[in-house]
Length: 436
Ligand SMILES: Cc1ncc(COP(=O)(O)O)c(C=O)c1O
Image (tube, rainbow, N blue to C red; front, side, top):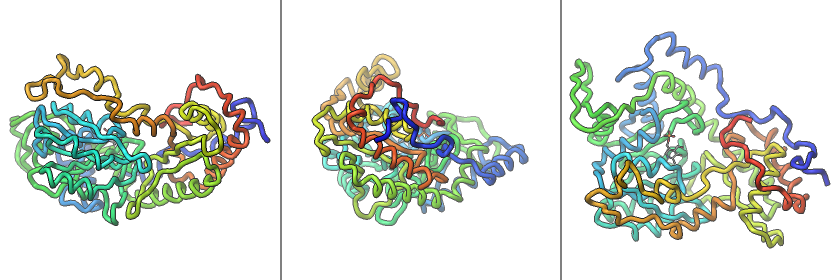
């Protein structure tokens, strides 16, 4: 048995083998240089922004795409586009990034949360209907971790109750449900282009729709509440509330050049995930996400759950996860935390101070009817307590050369499990998305 790296033993993963994401290529650099050479950095109808919108609409298969300066902004535009108003309620999953819910707050609307399925990590569609009331206007399902949620079932619920469907596909560029790309199922859908995402632009967002009216309303919110008229001088007249949510030329050019390799990179993520699943399958204490039939996962995140009882250990599962995670990190393995609590557990939702005076929860429609009770999101909390994630380790150009060391490190830890159980959980974890 070899000594664990956390106690001074040899580090399993050789330094420099792990390539951080995104690996910037010559054609990515050329794309950004093209913008600098052209000397057009911003504007309403600039070439890279227009090009990205055209190409992403084609890639997804929708009539329109608008690009914004973040996924959060795209979601806010979508919420406005379908006509959600102050005090209206939108339903989303408790296991997501804050923005799936806070974009509604930006519009003075109220997010309502639903717990998840423990095996797929996706919103539990059986619990959606009990959250619907006369104030509910939309469902925002999230294709979390890059795997499509059961969008057919959710769409059926939305249609039955006359609700809009806004797909949060921020983590699921190119993922397929029944062979069709995410972003095609909602009245509107959104994606994020931040630097960690499968399609990285640095920062930015994308909004897709087939509906002319939704597109125009989204564009209005994106542009200060003005109605841009193509080819005519700007009137500087805002018709409603709006923000400055435009994307910029350099991020758009970068994203366009990455779009050319998105499918190839997604394929590498899938191969890497399959390799890890196969080569770690003998460690019975590790549990992998269930992928239902007809879903193509693009692995924005690869989450691994632990269950020490499967190897006969009667220990606290959360503590076990924390110890194993630190031992793995010391070996050079990516084993990070992404989210530590259900979104409604965050202080924003527990204190409900919002914009001040408790808005938007205290507005005339809502009057503090809502309370975010943590006992309703136990499955999300359990998932986060008992698992960790890999992300950039699965990304191109990383492959078997790196992952075989990860597999060795896992085996090393489980062969020395008594030593893992002694790991000090106060050792700080490495930051997620940090370069190592
Ligand atoms: C599920 C989800 N929705 C929305 C967003 C918001 O995207 P952005 O960071 O581009 O604003 C993110 C970003 O991490 C996300 O993961």
